[in-house]
Each structure stands twice: as C-alpha cells, then as structure tokens.
Image 1 (cartoon, helix red, strand yellow):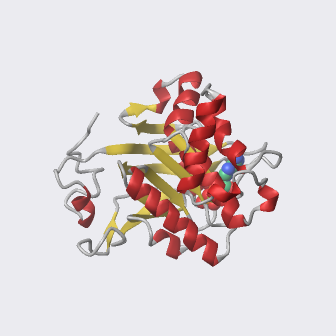
Image 2 (tube, protein in one colour):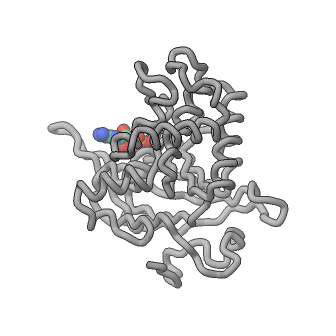
Image 3 (cartoon, protein in one colour):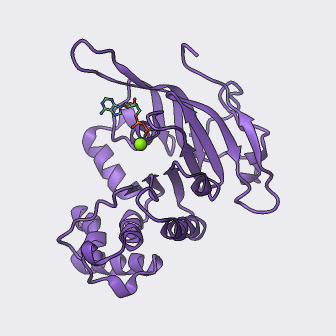
Length: 276
Ligand code: ADP
Ligand code: MG
C-alpha cells in the first residue's frame, strides 16, 4: 500500500525532507496513524495515557531519531510500532500491512525475520560467546547451525569484532558488547532495526563509534533505523529528529546528516488526537 495525498496527516509533503524520494513516490515502511496507548493503572489510580494520537511515518532506508523527556512515550511508541505492545487506538502499518491484522504467531515470526532490536542494556546472554549470542536468533527461527554460524561471523565482521568471536560478554567492553548486540540485531538482515537508547550505557567515545557504525550499516545495507535517544549528538547523526512530549509528536527536524544538499530546518507537525 502506498497511501499518499492526505494533506491533513502528510506532514512532510513539500518539506525539506522530500529530497529523500527523488522519484516523488513516498515509500513508507512504518506508518502510525492516530496511535493511542493507555496503560491501565492500579486500583484507584488514573490510567496513564502514554500515546495520545500519534501520526508518524518512516521512509524505507531512513534513519530517524526519536527524542523527548523521560516518560514522554518514546519506548512505548517504539514497542507499539514493533508490535510488542498492543495498541488501544489507531493503527500501525509495516510495509503497508496492519499489525492488528496479524495473529500472534504471524507477528512473532514477522518480528524475528523483519525486525532487529538493540537495547540500552545490551541484553546479551552471559553464558554464550559473542558468536553464539549473534547466531542465537537464527537458530530460534530454524536456520541450519552451520549457516547460522557463518552468518553470525559475517555480522561480527561487519561490526568490526571478528577478533572477539569467542569472548563472553563479561570479557568485552560496553562498546564492544553493544556492537555484538548490533550484530545480533542485523544478522537476519531485517528491514527495520529499532534501537532504544543504544548509547545510554556507553561513554561518549564508544557512543560516537556506535552511532558511526549504525549510520554505516544504514547506508551500506539500506536498512531502516529508528533510534530513541536522549542525546542530541546522537539525534544529529540521523536524517531526521522527531521530538515528542506528553505522548504526542511536537515537531521534527531535518538534520542535514544526509549531505550538503539537505538543509536543517524545523517542521511544525499538526497535532492530532483529542485534548490538545
Ligand atoms: P520514555 O521511553 O519516553 O521515557 P515510556 O514510553 O517508557 O517513556 O513511558 C511513557 C509513559 O507511560 C510514562 O508515564 C510511563 O510511566 C508510562 N508507562 C510505561 N510503561 C508502563 C507500564 N508497563 N505500565 C504503566 N505505565 C507505564
Ligand atoms: Mg524509554
């Protein structure tokens, strides 16, 4: 599906970001339409509205940062887009297919083959070596062990860790552990990689290296990256920064990270949903 022309929600039509699609055809890989997510509270407490009607789109091959204060809904948005959290209103389309139309088994399989995940805390299995951690998701989806091993080695090479294949996480630095986690995220060649505060536990040098790596993977493999971050310097390495506040998207910035022909600017985004 290639929806187009709905001026009410197509915030970037004619905007500085439109050079991303020189042929004029917008190729959305992720579309959130009027996304609502409310967490049920404990007895006697008010429910928590985490997303209050979010319209958000990502082009295929784009690298987008989501920024905003703690508690504004960044992780919730990412989890809803990835089909990890169920939504209470609106819709999420990945490659034009609504997640709500997939049953649990289809969604789980879809996540395993089309999506990669990187977390702030690395989430490596401590008893497995680097290469075993990276091949693990392939083995879970039934890949033959020899093939899984080879692909894991290739992915570790892509994150420049070939010489650490046999190391357990405890013998790797934080930056190296996160690169193993990136290798694990890309090993199945997913179309989309979601990264939630991927540099949050890294020193600034390792954070810079990691972002350089993500940027390179994005460019060379054409994979779409969505990066939640607190750090402006991380956001500035992405094509676009989407700013959130109180469960809504406030505005977005085109960063100029793409090259000299792209101009930095802030684009006001129409608020949707009720109450704002
Ligand atoms: P961010 O990632 O921007 O810090 P979150 O998406 O984690 O924000 O949280 C958004 C809001 O939803 C916050 O008010 C948070 O307290 C609340 N929230 C997040 N997860 C849960 C949960 N599992 N149960 C109840 N409330 C939650
Ligand atoms: Mg978060």
